[in-house]
Image 1: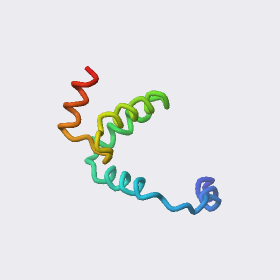
Image 2: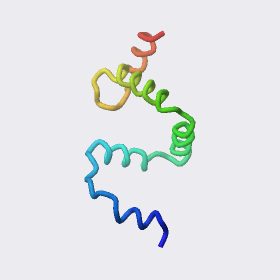
Image 3: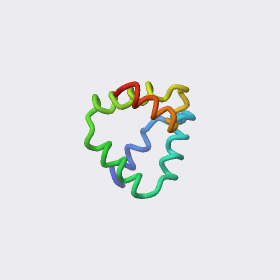
Image 4: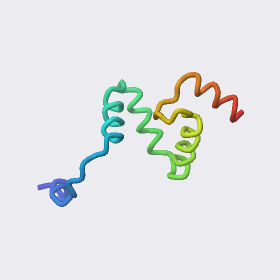
Length: 81
């Protein structure tokens, strides 16, 4: 049996939060190109860069719903430019 399968038996059975489930569903619904692009970006960014992007996203997402609308993006670009 492969070591990954052996380790999986030891993994804690912790339920995923609703946010994680929602993000996984969103990711699975993306087209193949978009998913591949996100994977490539994620592989090459450092933790600090990811955190910086997350902070900027949070500032632009003014209603804190996890989605940046066109209006929020326009306002954010004007604010940070």
